[in-house]
Image (cartoon, rainbow, N blue to C red):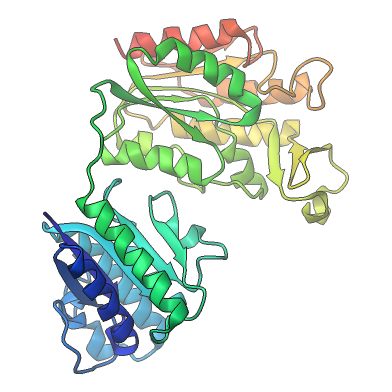
Length: 397
């Protein structure tokens, strides 16, 4: 059985880390205590901070030269990100920490493969954890109290976390099947399309549907980069709206870049490129207050994209598609890109959609392997779903 790696700043959190170590050992799982503190101490650990620091890609001696705490924390995170993936006996990782420790430990966790158990007990776990977790399967557990001493609260929280990691390492995962993984992107307003496509393909493919909420797109592409997923239907590229117009569900400038790095067949579309996402109505930026807004639910307000914005998105997407080394089929639903971009619906605006399609046609350098496919349908029409399946099967026989 592989080992449990217990990671934290032993100069300040040794007692808590040692408590977790003892609980895991009692379950029969071997442990490795890794120090990522930046101050000297005399506690007994299995891997010293200096050994971890030696893995830093450019500054292996930073512990002797860096005096500013923030810089030291950042450097140790970079070192741990190189150290953990190199450990062949690693079965899972648990970390304890406040903001600094959480930053360091999750920097390493994010570099580990999907499926490797990762638990972070943190004072930061009840807030915005996106910077720590990203598109990774890291389990964040709120420490309730600060990670400072063993008391009646921390004893329970830390023991539960330790036992959870032990179970993850020693437990078994039921066997699955050998169908090829297929990733698809979906939003509520493209669900009918994605469901029809999934039903058509799930007999032959193990279909993974990613909610296009920013992190969803990042997770989708992370699996492509990992080599686990070589078939995709990127139907819902809506995160690009949020990236370019300042919405809350952006996947960042790197959206679609996995397909530049990996020469796999790419079938995609313009799903939900009619909307930018914000929080409740009162959170919409002042510069957008006079725009066409739609209350999706009390927590989500949608803003309709304009012809000018759609032109910008078409050029942005087109420039990415031109860099894909693999075959490309990018399907354009000429009668609407979402459920609410249809006659009689709130975001129906044919001129805005036409600006998107025109920009794509003008920007994409079409070849035998890179094609735009124009179809006189709404994205949620059964015929459009069938066309997606047909083009997918053509590239993935």
